[in-house]
Image (cartoon, rainbow, N blue to C red; front, side, top):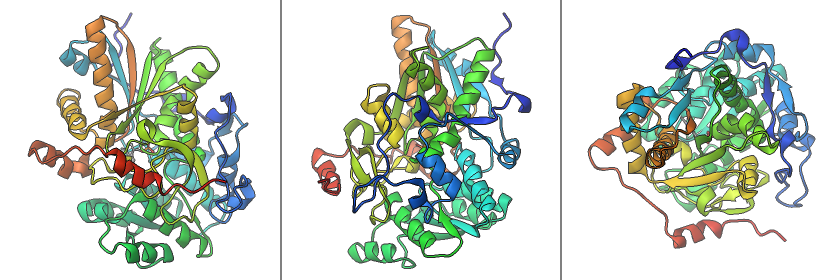
Length: 455
Ligand SMILES: Cc1ncc(COP(=O)(O)O)c(C=O)c1O
C-alpha cells in the first residue's frame, strides 16, 4: 500500500455539497429554546426579529437530515476549502506511540480558524434576505474576524461587541476586523441599555461573552434591517460546521481509515459538534462506536462540573433560555488566555449527547495545554491556537496511553486554528508567568445561583 501522505486535500469536486443535521438521527432531541417568561418553546417565526429567517428555521429544524449548501457559500468555501486532513507522523515519532494520529486543520484562512465556515453561511443568508447588516459579539476575536471577512465579501455592515479584556490585549485582532470594514466596540459599552446596566453594577469589569451577547442582541433588535448572529452554541452553527466532519470522514475513507477516538476542544461546541457530526451519526445508527472526547479548560468546566439546566445564553438576560450544561450565566471565568473557551454554557446538542452518554469530557489545565502546543508546534510546524491546543493535549494523552498498552488506535482531532494573535499567552507560558486556575466549588456555586428559577 502506498504511504499515507502528510497532508491530504480533497479536490474541489470532492467537497461536500450538503451540511448534515445531527439532530435528525438523535434518538432523543435536545430541549428546545424557550421563552424566558412563559417557558413555552419558541417556534422559528418568533425568532425572526433576532435571526435571519432561514437561520431561524435551521435552528428549530430537528428533522431535515441534509441541507444543500447554497452556491455562493460554496464559492467562498472554495477560497480556503477543502481543508487538509493531516497525519501527524512527526508527533507520533516524537511520542514513540503505536497510535496513528490525524488532525483536521482549519487554520488556513485569513481569519485563522474554523469560525469562517459558519460566518459565511450566516452572512450569506442575511444578504439573501435583503438585510443591511449584522451585529455580533466576539471573545478572543476569531469569530469577529471571520464574520468581518464574510460580511465584507457579501457587502454587509457589521457591528462587533468585543469583550473588553480581549479588545485591550489584542489590538491587532481589532485592526483586522476594521480592515474588513467592521465597527468594533469594547464590551460592556455605554452604547446599549444592557452595557450600561452591567457597567453600573461593576465599572471595572473586563467583560465576558455573556455581556457582549446582550449588547449585540439589543443593538440588532433596536436597529431596522439588522439581525444578530452567534458563532457557536446554536444548532445552526453546528450544522454549518458539519463540513469539517464530512470532509474528514470522506478523506479518511479515501485512506481506508476510521477513527477509534475523535477529539475536539469545546468552548460553545461548534467545532466539536461539526467534527464529530458524521462519526456521531455512525455511532447513533449503530454502525461504529468511536469514543468522542470534548476537551475543556479546567478554568471554565461547563461539561465536567456544570449543571444540565435551562439558562440564559447571555448575562443581561435578553436571550431565550437554552437547556445545556452551564456554569450559570453569571459565571465569570478567571482571566484565561484561551479566550475562546470561556463561555458559561455548551451547545444544547452536545449537552444532550453528553447527558445521554454518547460523549466523554475532560478538563485540562492551561500550562499542560501550552506544553502540548509547544511540543506539537516544534514537530508538526504549525503554531496552534490555544483553544486548539486543548485537543492536542488530549490527543497526546491518548497516544501515550496507547504507548503503555501497545494498542495502535487511530486518533482524529480538530486543529481549529492558528495562534498568531495569541503570542502574549505563549510568552506568559515561556516566562513562567502563566497560572492555572481551577474554580472552587464555592466559586461555581456563585455562578449556579444565577440560573433562572424554573417552576
Ligand atoms: C481557534 C478556536 N478554536 C476553538 C474555539 C472554541 O469555539 P467552539 O467551541 O465554538 O468551536 C474558538 C472560539 O473562539 C477558537 O477561536
